[in-house]
Image (cartoon, rainbow, N blue to C red):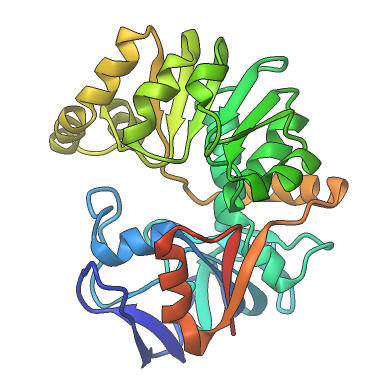
Length: 332
């Protein structure tokens, strides 16, 4: 089978399309014939080695973190799925590889695809939807009638996070460029801030929760709008000691992450706030809940563009520039 791989970490967007063996499945795994795969900023981080301390892979590495496809074979002990099922997944951290014609996936990471989505649309969902779900439910433990701000919420993440947050009874505010206003409001945002003409830090106050998608440079401004005891979860700014403990990392790694995240923790404490970092993990159970929600509300993900597998480098370059409005998808 063909697979897009890297043989070394590099800042350069460059992959090799190699012919490799179709993976052998274990007893609790299924073999998925990949129809489409989502391309994410995480793939760029996997390429340049930025997340090696969180997820270190043997090289050569087949890239890709989320996919949709059809089950071609099932392991002896698989109970939940059968050959022919249309499925989608955020692949387990220790076994990524969506940019390939086949993938071996543990059944616990899988869900049936939403019936209202195509393979291309379904491939755009798992990573962003699970990130939103885990940020809101697991990390923030968000309560109804509270205020949530998502800076930069006009892309693929916001397309999932806004409706999920609204379903939990939150007031949702987001920011972005003007071209994202109509869609953000149409999927449930209560307020939209044009970042080019307005500064959210001058407008907002007494916010309960912030989901940071922009990184450490925005942290000070984001914390300034939170009320005391307000919580900020970042998808980008960097891990801290609490993240290392929750991830059950060894003591040396906890100490290291404690040092790395000390400035962010200190900044949050100064404002009487809580800082958390999220690195999304696979969960078939949560994805099944998301599937039911997507079908019930007839939610469609935001798709920026699709590329064939032959043009995978172009897709990765598009994502690396940060200019995509929604998800970039590779089709097989």
